[in-house]
Image 1 (cartoon, one colour):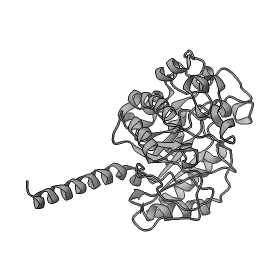
Image 2 (tube, one colour):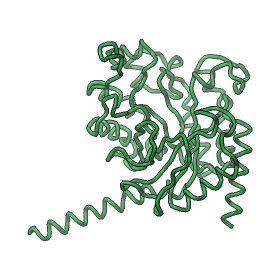
Image 3 (tube, one colour):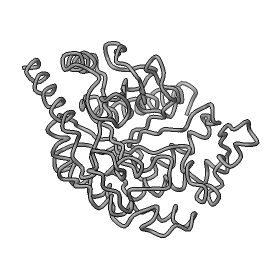
Image 4 (cartoon, one colour):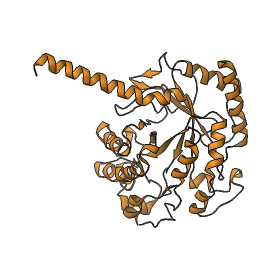
Length: 335
């Protein structure tokens, strides 16, 4: 093969890669709107009003979640995908995870659970043509001392680093095996990942993000990934391993350029509907939020809203009614 043919082959390869990436993100762009849900021991297994004051084992809390109720309400508010937490900070997973169990010594039914909530959730969402994405973290179990010791979590070294949490290669390689277990468990049932806590200021760089990316794509190479960089003032991609922007924002005063692509990635924003993350009510008026979602979608962007889900799997009643009205209004405007 001469130099000219090699050059043409290289251009063809780049074109094929770009086309594949575009096809992968098409479903997300077409989805336009979805929700993120925090389902955690520290949230749904508490005496908060939305749990009717019910506090049990984590195992029982997971068993109480009705995926059919949740999926039906998600469908009725117009969500075409759901980002659902597998774990965040503490030791509790809403699924079995053999790798985590072996590494920590926790028996199933304590930190992990017997019910496979994600599998059940996928089945309920899939019947309604709603995609499932998962929320995971790069800092792992950072609020459980026993697990941190077994996993050699760098949180243990914080006192030596001016109380700063700084990751190292050994930790990233260990934690990536836990994430790979999740990816291989669900494979193509998972359409994407939203990765929190993999920040540059705690030591994550492109090499370490690549390790997480490879682990998360092990079960489904076409699954989309976004690495969150903590709340920013603008929506953009911060890693070459992103397929879409994490887009964590506290406001809704930013919109995509026509086409919905920024830094070569799908433009996506995530913010909370309530007064803060996983709280009831709405800090927006219906017109304000309805107009914003419509304008973002018109330019090819995607909007995710964090909403509160109750222990039984139903959405906060006010948010459920509020988002149904917005869907109705936007459908009317699109007729």
